[in-house]
Image 1 (cartoon, rainbow, N blue to C red):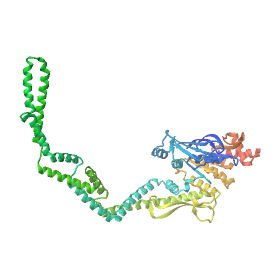
Image 2 (cartoon, helix red, strand yellow; image 1 turned 45 degrees about the horizontal axis):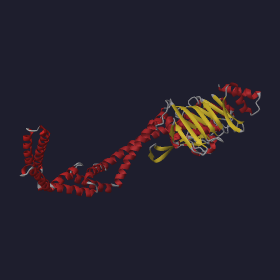
Image 3 (cartoon, helix red, strand yellow; image 1 turned 90 degrees about the horizontal axis):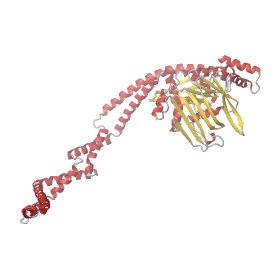
Image 4 (spheres, rainbow, N blue to C red; image 1 turned 60 degrees about the horizontal axis):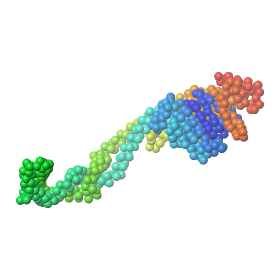
Length: 553
């Protein structure tokens, strides 16, 4: 439900803040006072396109804020959460700013939003019916939802859509497989060969570094052995070996220590050097024993490196990249459906189609029954709205192959006058007729309508007297289930409202401004009397106005 509307610097409105109530509210005032400005401001907040001409003269920008109570609207709450636009609990705040250059920005609950998101939120919150406003009932999707909602077929419709999508997915898979059968078979054969080749190579990502290291050692084994042997000889085996010379020196230092203790530090260092050299000799001999100079092992290493290099050149990658290539080949084979059975796939598709058709036919039967009763209800409502002899039909138009929404498209059709052929509601020429037809539809289907707030702009065009009073009663009836706001020129309609607002226009310091006043008691009698008799209000028109209000109470 719309709770609050703030308008700043919009057309001839300087500043306006309005609090809304439930039920039926009538918006009245003299022609040209700016009643439609309120509707235009709401439309802007709901994502309709605007231009710089809407900004009040002399101002940089206009700003519209509309606050809705969504505590009883779980569908709106879910949508906001899906869009990451949820705000305070039970509240949805739409804000639109438009500058004099025509640039605009939109916000939902304080977060920046696109015009598409603003419009999507608006369609869930408010519906505007009028000659120059967007009307959701003209959308084919809304027409289908109207019928399915009226008949309680929402879940059935969702099931049909789900089954259709499943069938189409299997059909696309089968067709693609048939069209690409030869190419897929050739690709699969090549991939299987490559997979086997790489599996036979059995090459791991960390093997390449180890191969190179071992190959380097084996290819230089002779030099390495010679180096180790030379080290052993220099240190311990030659006649002038380091260790022999060091041992002789140690003997002399130990002897001299008896005469001078100052040699002790030198002795400690020499003994440490002796230990280090002995350990070096041991390490070199161990290295000699461990180093494998086997020519056969060398040949094995060279063959392994050659095999890996050949595979790397074939697949145009570095050797260490061969394992990821192998993983990609396996994944592609899985994607192609290595073991897929064409016959099994065709059987799955046939089963999915049969399930879809069964559910769709059931939905069609239920829709046909509901369409007949809804058509009769709306036709009856039209007879009371100055459209005697008019006819309404919810037509089910068969589709050649069916679709996600079933085996038929839903089209609302109307014949506004006796003898006229039924035509699509979207092609009705008269805006006044369209507004009244929309009213008839909303009244007939109000128990299933999801939109909480309905606005009717000039719904009373071309009618008066008894019919006008009926229109007012229908709007009042609609107001028991929805929040209804109606711009009207007819006193019979305004008198039926739960609340009445008067729009007026005044010139202040040379600037034309629009004002809205909530009417109470005698003020409402005066406004209804003005609507009955024009500028000159008499006791008779006041009495008539009081009677109209009393009759609606």
